[in-house]
Image 1: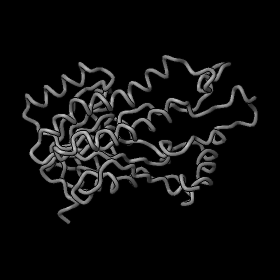
Image 2 (image 1 turned 90 degrees about the vertical axis):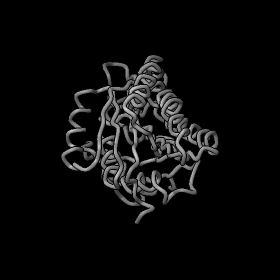
Image 3 (image 1 turned 180 degrees about the horizontal axis):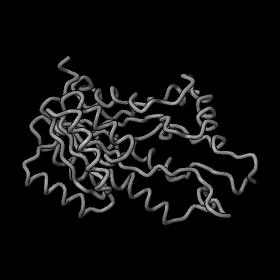
Image 4 (image 1 turned 180 degrees about the vertical axis):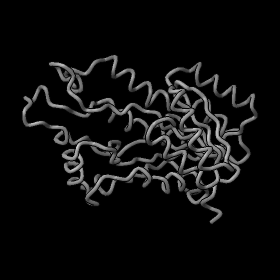
Length: 274
């Protein structure tokens, strides 16, 4: 259907070299969109771009090394897009740090009382400041389009619920050494919802819509025990497959959702309703 197509549109995706970043690229290319891949990892960018070009030879793909924490880096990419006369219709703020719950030495630094300020600052800079900077520059570009465009912030089910720290418990560890999901992740993802609401009204008169997509956990070779624990918390009885957010992102970026803005689309198998 025409409402679900993005032919002639161009999307910029941050964190495009990551696991979900690639899935976002595939989702948009599948409905006709050209894609600008950005990431700090140049080698992975090349690999992802080659994969996409092989799969979708009729689409256009571009790649730029981008550190979303650095305003000069974001501004330089914006300038390069203008030099290449690349119009921008869609921005996907996807770059983030997803801390893995592991014990480091004697002190578990994922725990709030041991969480390092440097780690906090770095993760806030990537996930939240990065989304702000990309919106400031790339969102502004979109606002200058005759018909506006779309911004989608990739949040998480942890934007609406707290992490269940029981998922990471080990019977052989005392409480002070137990793994936890760090506080930074919840703060970043919750902050993105506030950013979404702000942006949805800021450029509304320019035709720019902004929504958030909050995925639940994606199964990706985690330990079997962890997958089983998470699955028990989900009414659907399982974690998501990596491709199961494609249709949601397509919907948020195309005219099928033209009357939707400022919202947080939570797709978590029902976990947040229990």
